Amino acid sequence: MIDFSLSGRRALVTGANTGIGQAIAVALAAAGADVALAGRSEPAETLRLIADAGGKAVNIAADLSSIEPVERVVAETVEGLGGIDILVNNAGIIRRNDLADFTEEDWDAVVDTNLKSLFFLSQAAARHMVAQRRGKIVNIASLLSFQGGIRVPSYAAAKSGVAGVTRAMANELAPSGVQVNAIAPGYIATNNTAALQADETRNRQILERIPTGRWGRPEDIAGAAVFLASPASDYLTGQIIAVDGGWMAR
Ligand code: NDP
Image 1 (tube, rainbow, N blue to C red):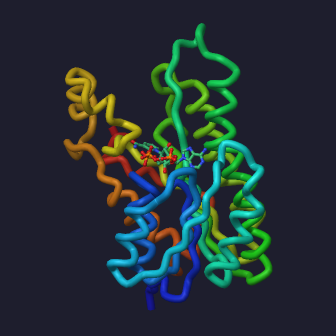
Image 2: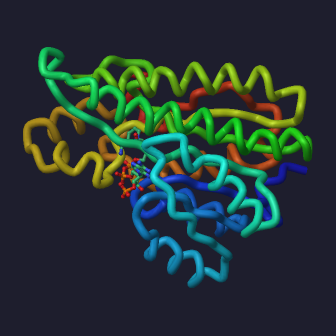
């Protein structure tokens, strides 16, 4: 029987106070998982949404711009939920600048948050998953895992790296019963893209280019995340799945 249930599963989601991470955390909880939320800002609204739906969630304060907190974040997840079966690496930032003006700080901030922390958090979680011979890692990549974008070189580098490290981890962890996949969201209406949505010309160009004819919603990404976290996807690993309203198909 195909099993989409997450009942009894323990999930860690990074950057879940808002946007895509919030939608994923709420959807995992609705599918039956207990959820740990790790991030910089207090995820008060996410905690409330999960509690209102009768789910269990714990908050772990952590700034993932460095790898310093990653072991603690996984240890607190295991302590708070009794283990870890699912890791969703969602926390991310973007910096826009012309090539000539791009600074080392613009590079390091984006690569460290979006890629380095993702890898070392996965490493720490994988120790538990390998020991129990069961686990799901879901990385949030981007269309810029495949394309160069405009004025975002460190983001394109980091998200391409997310695709590469997803495949590398998937290969190594598959024999241990752990699947590693990534979702590449298209244009999703969140704080991250507020400036693009507000720019009338850019907004029109984006909408004309999306076959589905609308911006994505965070919930569109959450549906794919629940599938990739569930037993229904046990034979799927090392894939970067674009959830983009058809953008990549064009
Ligand atoms: P948001 O800005 O709404 O969410 C980003 C999340 O990451 C926030 O919770 C933020 O927390 C957290 N975060 C950022 N830096 C850190 C840090 N140093 N330590 C801990 N948490 C941190 O944007 P989205 O929901 O749009 O983005 C979520 C993911 O989706 C990102 O990886 C992004 O790159 C990716 N993505 C988004 C797309 C879109 O169109 N929206 C398209 C493709 C990919 P805080 O509030 O504290 O900053």
